[in-house]
Image (tube, rainbow, N blue to C red; front, side, top):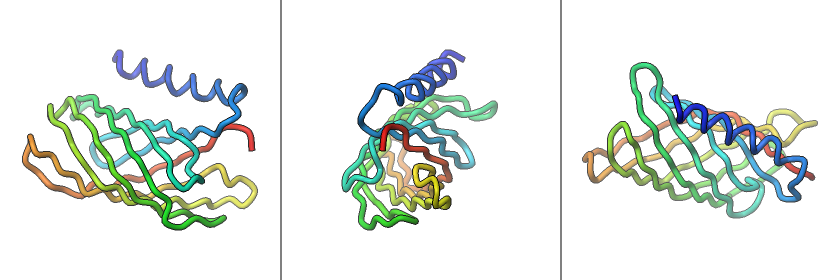
Length: 148
């Protein structure tokens, strides 16, 4: 329960910072079959951008995780971005570190509000400690905060 409170406080803090920041910051919520993640990152319209994610399970899969992702935009347009990068993370549920190569398709469906994006992500994950290699798929929503 403390992890949930911490996540909500961090999420609220980022929303409050938008009035004081000159730089653009993104917040996002991502989900797959097992985990929901909350992400905070830099401007995804830059050539390089980074994001940190907190993950929490649910009633069946209890655990906490952290991920750091560095992305490179291969293609940027008004309607969508395509990027790929590197990910390193830790999972309390599995008690293991994980490494990945995320590929991200960011779709900006509303012409009047390009700060809102729908995300589709595929990440091949390797965990040497747990001994698995899998592909994780995420679906998410991201919003860019800040002046611009």
